[in-house]
Length: 161
Ligand code: FES
Ligand code: FES
Image (tube, rainbow, N blue to C red; front, side, top):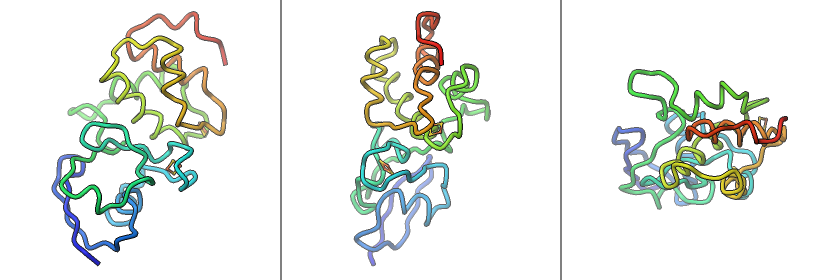
């Protein structure tokens, strides 16, 4: 066991972890931040996406120890400061960008990071960027629509679900 310290959702946290502890396990099991989901554990589904130093990262692909000193943001902290839904979260709600909701935290984290680096992505760019996020309910059209809407773009040309 070794102590790992990082900033999660704006708070400094330290916990003893085994070397094999994944970041997603650290968040869910040590910090009870269960909004970050585990859909595969093999780096395929994107349900576990969080932001590490501002970049979208699949948290099952890194060890907690590798996040030593990092700034980590999870789905629990993407809302606005006043507790209202972020623009991306609101757009997912407005455009029904979810069905069972299992993939949604990862989708929102991926979309939020995308819009930070590319505020007006094309539909093709969004679809390309979501390549690492799987929705087993296959609600992709509405997810794309939500991301287009969150970026202030017209969604009428996006295929209907
Ligand atoms: S649980 Fe991390 S990519 Fe699926
Ligand atoms: S909404 Fe069910 S997996 Fe995406």
